Amino acid sequence: MLSDLTKRFLEYVSIDSESRSEGDFIRHLRSQLVKMGYEPAFYPASDGSDRGNLFLFLEGDKQTDPLLLMAHTDTVTPGRGIKPIVEKEYIHTDKTTILGGDDKAGVSILMELLDRLASEKTAHRPLEILFSYGEESGMNGARDAIAGSYIRSKKALVLDSMGTVGKIVRASAGASRMRATVFGKSAHTGNAISEGINAIQIAAGAISQLPLMEIDHITNANVESISSYGDPGAVTAKCTFTVSVRSGSPKRLLELKEQMTQTVRKSADDFGGSADIFWEDDYPSFEVAKDDELLVEVMRAYEDAGVAADPVYSGGASDANILNDGGIRALNLGNGTLKVHTTDENLHIRSFELLYGIVYSMVTK
Ligand SMILES: [Zn+2]
Figure 1 (spheres, rainbow, N blue to C red):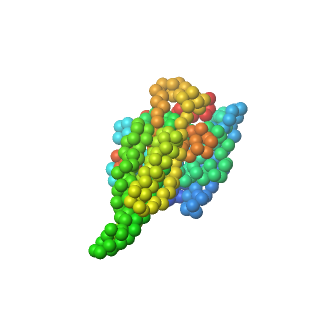
Figure 2: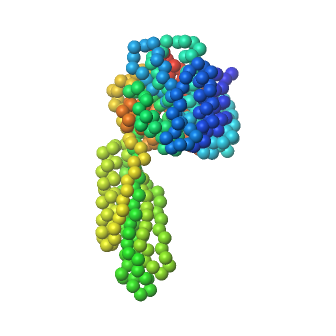
Figure 3: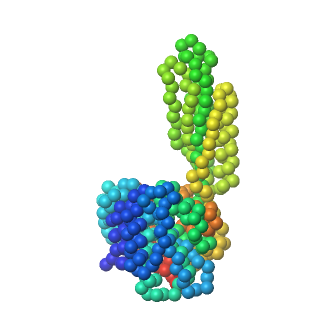
């Protein structure tokens, strides 16, 4: 016997919503919300694509600060034609697609909550609900929401972490990417090779000196790409490479960026070439203190439900990184999804249903 929540999940994962194609799914949610009696605001995507943020404010009847609840509407690939299979305690697919529980588990919980609040007319705290678009394509919806400053809440629960119920992501890595282009000097290899400076050698010299792979338990770096084109018979004069760095410590991230910049410049100097270096920030890190009010409240809600709370550090990013950076304290909660971003993705039904019950009791208590 499937619960209404689980039936809702099965319905939602059957609607395709790969990143950049989540418009139809968002419209479906919007029309369901209107049928429930809500008037959701729709904020079109800032990149002009056929998607956007769905946002609701529920005034509530308690004299407390509003709480933001959030889940994202897009999925990774391959996410077309998903056929969910319920088997004992889990929901999975035939392994030709992902399941899309990331983050339709979160979306289902929030939609079921809204449906229940509307039909039961239960007293609840002031709530803001955001269904963000484009989380998988770079947390686009969360970035838009912060830029648009329509969120009043100072604290948020994001229902988008892989893991069984009880997991609480209270800290996460931040990441940056270096795009380096090093320049040498072209010269004919037949009769003037000593006048040339080889850019690939500059790049190789730099990369061999960079701190890479696992640097400490919350910091790592990876050479992502290298490319160069050389004319036959000439010393190669240009080479481009990218290196990503992530760390749970913003200070460590800054130090590494500086160290890597200096390493590339030194290699260029050593060979007599030059370097153009650009850093782009992928996403910021965050850390919510162990004695933080919101964290303590969530831990207590888990305890009341008989669930062991497990606050953790995560190496991955979510909308919670963007919210925290934008001044909204946010935790990302394990929603029962497992092995996300793979065709082995599955949902632990009991975790998912327990989280729904916990969120319901937190907002109505
Ligand atoms: Zn997700």
